[in-house]
Amino acid sequence: FVQQALNFGLSLRRHVPELERRFLVIVLDVAAQQELRDYGFRTLLHDVVAGGWDMNDVVWKFRWQVILAAMRRGLELAVADSDVVAFGDPFALLAGDADLEIAT
Image (cartoon, rainbow, N blue to C red; front, side):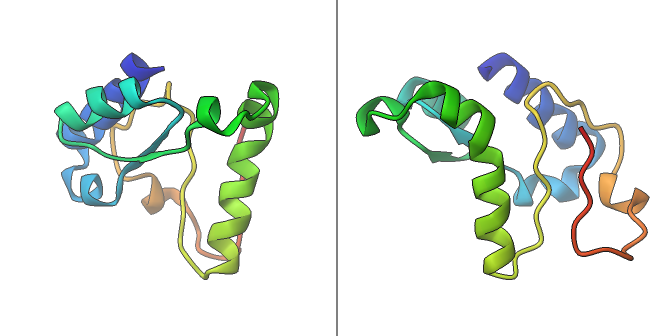
């Protein structure tokens, strides 16, 4: 996970540097958090080990919980898998004619 997230973050840094300040990686353990922070990326720790969470629920449901929480707070949000690479601004491709756009 960490190598993929780093690849994603570094592709933003190189190709779309204006988005890096808005880039946040939600990590599931302290080691991943530290490694990403060592590269200067912002992180949010969702410590599933300490919380006793079921890893299957975290992996399959957590992104939807994040989207719901952001929408309830009126935040603009893009959620992406860690294996994404950015070559340009993904927001430029959105028509802006919907409150929610999802691609899998």
